[in-house]
Length: 385
Image (cartoon, rainbow, N blue to C red; front, side):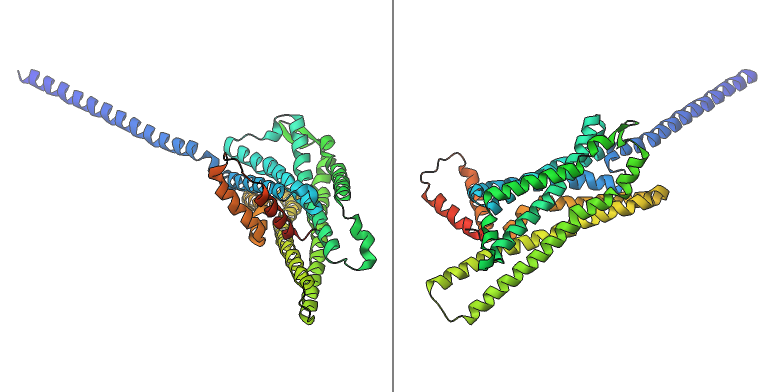
């Protein structure tokens, strides 16, 4: 009897030990599974923000894109109301709006797709690689030189008022402005067309097709891009804007010295105010253009020399710096309409009219008389006759 009780006790003890081991093992395995599965969920959720530069592209690039597209569409609408086709300066600003929209569609969208979905549209095919590279460089260069042409037109109409320059002033026509724009476009196309021959899909990625081509793009074309995109256009616009501002100050000084108060003087004052508004707008645009475009050009030059021998920490710093300065440059192409609105009362007035018409878009306009009057009044804000 004693032996049986001992045996029964031993069996119960062994069973309890076995159950404890099984429970402990099951609990431990479940706990380990929970520990291992939680980080994987977090990693999947925040994959797009794995690095600071990818976070910037994911969050800021669509914001810049939508703000810029909205602003440029408003710019096109306002210029249409101003009857841009009747004025050389407004034609250039109209074309500039479409060029800036091209930059925004090609640039920020690519980096947003790449950082969010890990897909580079340049790597889709050889043509997408070549065409995307050409289009981003061409559209940026074109935007810079349209601003140069606008500034030159303003300089001729504001500063070259002496009779000696009558012939030059007569050359500033819509036809000649379009011809010059086509010539500039052809020159920039020739400059950037090499991407169709020098780049393609190599090892599954869009790259230079040879080592000597890579060396040219990294150590030569970066300087060409700096000169064509920023240095020459920036110097021309800064110098011409300084001369325009001096001319406006001279006209104001002459007006203060004049004792006349007839109607012609009052018209002269209105004309000076109009020229001043346009000049202020161009000065703001020029300043921000240089401030936004210069850092990215300098970065590419520095990156060409630093990245080949850089450590992983330095590479991460370069990637972050690249994302910051490139996003700043894209804001230039998104901000022109807002500069126009901030510096020109007529643009602000037209923006208010657009807001009031949002709820009445399907109501037909009963009379065109106020619209024609507004168009004439708006055209006076540009300082062009």
